[in-house]
Length: 169
Image 1 (cartoon, helix red, strand yellow):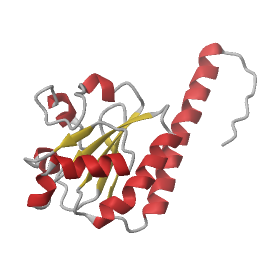
Image 2 (image 1 turned 180 degrees about the horizontal axis):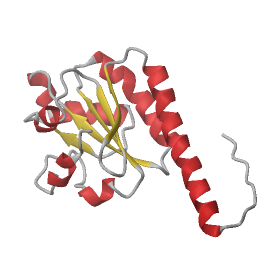
Image 3 (image 1 turned 90 degrees about the horizontal axis):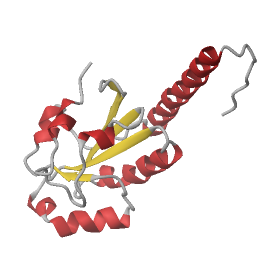
């Protein structure tokens, strides 16, 4: 599986839109979603609210990194990116990938591109484009839900309680 090693290389020198983040911030949770988008990409703008909703639903289990990838000269304007971030209520760290470093590291050929990494820093799932996006988000919900079930079962075996617990979602 591909790895999220590029997060290890992020530093205060990285081109953050707002405050700066370290790799430790991202690895505090079970999963990290990295989504690549551009202000000039209409599909990207269409998918951002869906990503935001998924992140809100699962905030206890994951962190997110929003990566803005310029596709044209206008996309390099920080004010333009900031406007979309405010309008779309993006609260995740936003990294400006003006040099396409993360784009090439992930070998992303199209936008939007979304990657879900596990705590072992491996890609668990990825989505390129918006075709069948609803079913993809549904599969992500199953992945996160399965992680919750596994943690409950692990917790029960550690306690050795023998009591049965029902889990409802």
